[in-house]
Image (cartoon, rainbow, N blue to C red; front, side, top):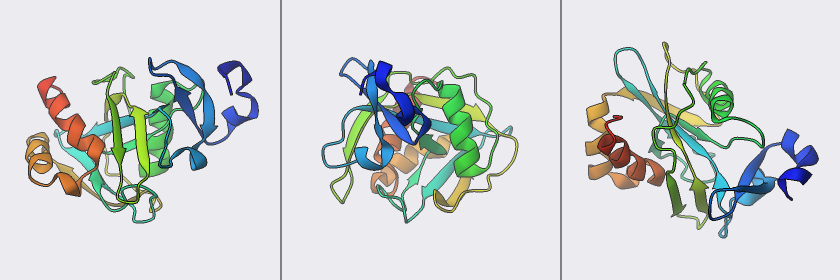
Length: 185
């Protein structure tokens, strides 16, 4: 499917497929794209902070298809065809955490890309801009997405990924050092 042929798929739950240069080439149903041979697609990661500086970590629900039960950044998602990163962040923030999220839409790590294989063999293969956003209250998580959550100090994130990388998502293991190096955490 090409961008010109997105049609009714654009209204459904899908991912935006990308070529190696990061250019959108079409869409695929989200439910079918994550396999042992996952194509490159667009995602995003978001780190939420509150006014006192705390950063929200969430623990993925045990029913998640990939990396169930691991701790990760505040939330992640997939923008839909024609949807801005800001719109996708707002949509996923409400769906996963019951929060109205404020972001300027400018990624802290615009070109972050990763490929990881979970214990069941499912591959994640994303161009995954990392955004920072703020909230002023605690989450009310969707239990299908999040089983636990905790506010942490930014200076706790580096030691966490250094000491227990198996306990957190592989994208967070890669993102935290880059965010620290960029002075964003």
